[in-house]
Image (cartoon, rainbow, N blue to C red; front, side, top):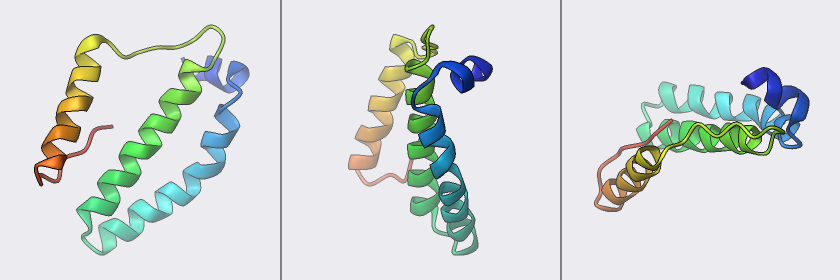
Length: 87
């Protein structure tokens, strides 16, 4: 699937260009034991990667209704103060 995104997604290059900064932020977060920085960065990177996949032709859409339900549940738990993230 990623090979299709590389060739066919108008967003793949943008994801790739931000990937290094995301990995550096995750390394800093690990070093500082900052779960929030690690989790938020990893989650955002995941969403950017999926956006690139969804925008490919043909679109690569891996999410199911259950996937979206879990994502919404993770957000709800985080709103309640739990440090949870998805990737």
